[in-house]
Image (cartoon, rainbow, N blue to C red; front, side, top):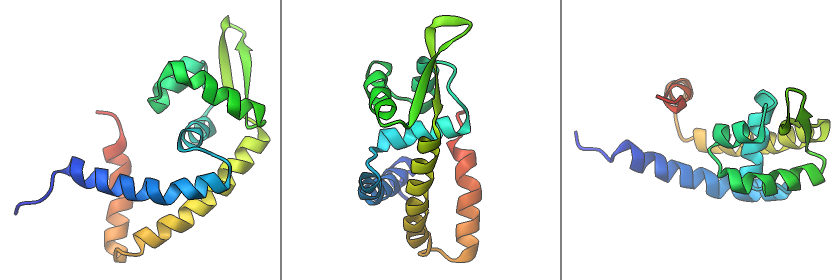
Length: 137
C-alpha cells in the first residue's frame, strides 16, 4: 500500500495543531516557544540556561530574550547555580505554573476536538504510540 511518508504526515498534523494552538496561547499572552519552555520547566528546573536550550531544541543565543520576557512577567526565576556562579538555574514560579495550567486546559479542549475525529480504539493507540515515537533515538 502506498502512503505518504511519516515526515509529511507529521508535518501536516503539526501545522494543523500549531495553527489551532497559536490563538489559544495568544489568549494567555504566550508564544509557542514560551509555552514549550514553561512545559519543559514544569517537569524539572533547568540546571542551566544552556541545558534548557538543548532540552527544548531552541537557539541558545535567542533563549536569553525569551527567558527575560518570562522572568519580567513573573513566570520564571533564574538564580545563580551554587556550584557555578556563571550558570543560572531556571525554574517556574507559582504564576508560571498557573499560566501554564490554564493554557494547557484550553489546548487540551482543542485537542479533544481533533481527537474526536478518531474512534476510541484509534485514539488509544495514537496516544500510546506517539510518546514512544517522540523519544530521541
